[in-house]
Length: 282
View 1 (tube, rainbow, N blue to C red):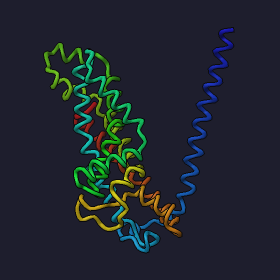
View 2 (view 1 turned 135 degrees about the vertical axis):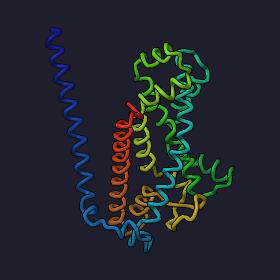
View 3 (view 1 turned 120 degrees about the horizontal axis):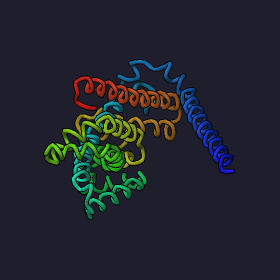
View 4 (view 1 turned 120 degrees about the vertical axis):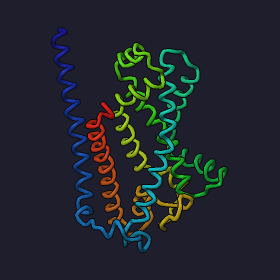
């Protein structure tokens, strides 16, 4: 009886895995089918030209510049906080730390907060209270707070997945906690940390709601990080929902967004390969 039950469970799990894979492939194929005509009509003019007629014509060069600036600033802002939480978690891994419990609770709370709430709170604090207004800086700082729990949770999981031998051997060699963390633990978990930041980049690039209230709608080329700027995701939303006749450029912009994510992923894989060859990571 138990053998038959086990077989039924194996069959059900196999069917579930097959169905999930098939669903993912169908969704991916539908996205490619919708974007393929737009990708075939992509050219350098669309990437390097300024928008025309409210985005219906021309290119998306200012949008790409704003997107890259917001992404870089947000990740650079989130990086030291992520490393700080990882280090504090490492040194208190065997202690019942109240502060660590509070940090984990805040991470879970932030991770479950709707993005529109981040947008309103980000504009109220960074835009109004700190006086940045609608700007790339306001959008980047808001996005940093949004992706921070995502980055911290994935990075913590990668650190906790390491064998305890790394820590024990470091202690046996008399290494300080600082040296053990930055010379042993971080290099060992580095590939997983890179994956966490790549996924964080994809999460940041796809965000729309929070940036509507922080970085603004401007199609002009930003002259500084204090100017408003429109990201690609916001541009796609605006063309699809608010601009009659903008559907074709919306699909083109979506194709550019997917290509940008693929470029980031490919670059991270290339850098990890080079770092492994130089012995900078495991």
